Length: 424
Image (cartoon, rainbow, N blue to C red; front, side, top):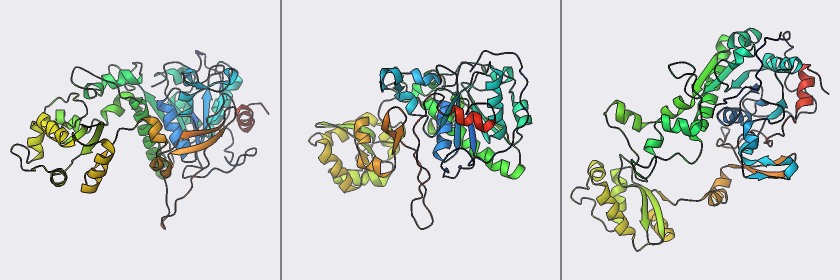
């Protein structure tokens, strides 16, 4: 979601500090050199909740130094989102916060305080990227509107994420993931049927906004290499969900059909979905006529059955196709059925619970789990980044040692000393 609160309610325009020196990012305290394609970048993260923090976590995963600026006392809203919480009562941590803040440093700044505001300005002047998801106008009230940011640092790339866009008739509207899922049409496509709208089981509008935002940042940084100047990248929860409507979008804009939820079966391909067997269910995806014929040969069916010879015919008779497939599966248990489907070359799979996913050897093999040492919780295993890098010889390149999500204000002394804002 986008942040609906300020870091402060300050409205007076405190004078800002002079331009700070462009200190080498690696020349600080006892910091180990960062690795990764973005290891030369500094990112100032003014975001809360999920959309913005997901974007900055993506940059941190790729080696950028990410400084997360939080409100004193409470910090990012997600620090209080739970249960579940883990750790001792006086130092408990939200698993929600842990999911989206690895590879970051934390400093708590009270922007009502002139010295703290100067620290933020010092960071801005050194930064390559600033990410914010405030309500429209908040930065201006803080004296850090886009014109001022660019005056202070003409090379700065700013990512701004809102709920429904920065302008337009509803541009100032508050944005929360589930509301955006509904307003952007996703819930109308998700559920057991047209009268059963359902939200996606993760905050997908937030996550997509973060992903699109990180993608936009990288494009702007590339252009900066040519022009020498930064720019503003804007996206929203609304834009990100509309941006992934895919065939459901053109189904309406081109064909004039309104897609509606229809459970676990594809609206344009059949058979493609979840099918019952003797002790449960399996999923199959027959995305070509060749696969249909392989499937039929493997289970003793006639691929040229009247009314089922082509995908278009099968989609028109979806219920009959479902009944035919489930009849073929009726005497099979799921595990041997999946083995048989693999044997005949039909894409298939099970529906795993999350504990099964994280215990799956294939997940571990793809680097999707990372081990970190948390300052109060000790050793943790976290879901990891979904990217891997290889050199021309096919050897995997290790991009960085991941760092646990920070405690609130954990890096304050180091950051303040670096920007000349006091502290150790």
